[in-house]
Length: 455
Ligand code: GDP
Ligand code: GDP
Image (cartoon, rainbow, N blue to C red; front, side, top):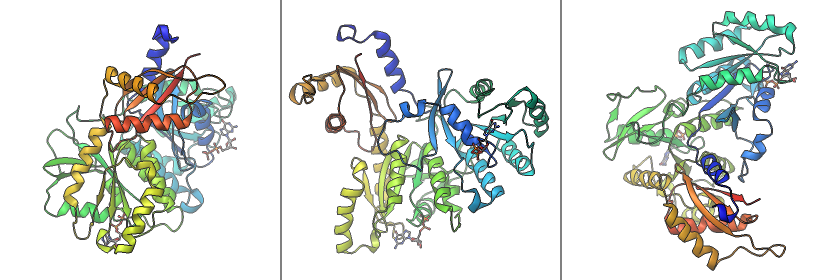
């Protein structure tokens, strides 16, 4: 590494950064106008732009990567909640519910200048019941004179109120120190089979694609529903279902079974639930209604799962209703609209008739295998050497940037760090990804490639 112009420490740092596992999740909740968005922006700071350089980042995104004192975590922003539609109490309760399901710890923001309201007290009860670690943020304490307002919030019974001015930054450091103490080192739901638990599946898709029908089919028909397993504590929002002789955990099935009927705001709600399920899962089974045109909403759900770095299986449902013409157009739509997951295993199913249900498990296993693939460094560099020789990067400004070496920094999903002598263009990065897939498989998994350029 040294002779290529990279310092050993840079290389090690880059590998560690690229190879991080799943991050713990912190949710910021509270009534409207208490300062949640201001706080989220302060925590993310300028890093946000640096962290997310992947394309296709949509407005629906509700999670960001943040860092404090060298520790990274996911920050869930519930500030965009459609309070006008849901009503303040319902909206805040829904946030709390979301945070309880999805987060490893919660920052509960209260406006110290207003004090605790009935809504705040209701949230406290929800949070207490859930038992997730909570850091109480007494916001809008802009100066020493506000400290007394913060002290009054001891009455909420959530422990020490942290006086903060999200607007000016006062006290946010101390509060974040408390957050780090509350956050587990790695998410509680440790990935993989290392802890011996069942693999976690999120069944996602826009409303009416057939999620609850599919769930009923797999849960009730000829398979056994396992209610309790020795040695596993069962989260009531999840279900253990035996498929193909293996027990799987379908996460957030409560969200599928509990049909939310809201005129407006339902999309945003559904999108948060999907995000929560995806965060908790290892593999996402994305259900598409094959009888209808693939929609922007379908694409957003796919993007969410890809960005979260989950293994992915595409399931085209309602196959029983397709005629030849629809089948023809469906294939064209898949090619153009869902090209971003062309690598995902695909099953054509019918929750109504049970068609091809038996293909679901092999597809899930394929995707998980791709997600966990590790390429030895020697093989990877032999492969990179061949590519650089046979398909060099185009010359730019009289120089030819070269990939010098690379390594796989992590799995679940596979993450690569390549070290280069100059800026590597997006087109060449895509070419590298394509070749990596041709060479090593990675069926059913997004792969991340970050490129470090020699100074
Ligand atoms: P959210 O609805 O909870 O996301 O609240 P916002 O972050 O949008 O903030 C609501 C209002 O409170 C805005 O006008 C902010 O400028 C203001 N605000 C937020 N934090 C502070 C603070 O620490 N001190 C003061 N004085 N105002 C704040
Ligand atoms: P969810 O909102 O994604 O949970 O969708 P549901 O499971 O509630 O299904 C929506 C509608 O599609 C219901 O009327 C189902 O009976 C119907 N449906 C679901 N799967 C199939 C299928 O494979 N074939 C047909 N013909 N209808 C289906």
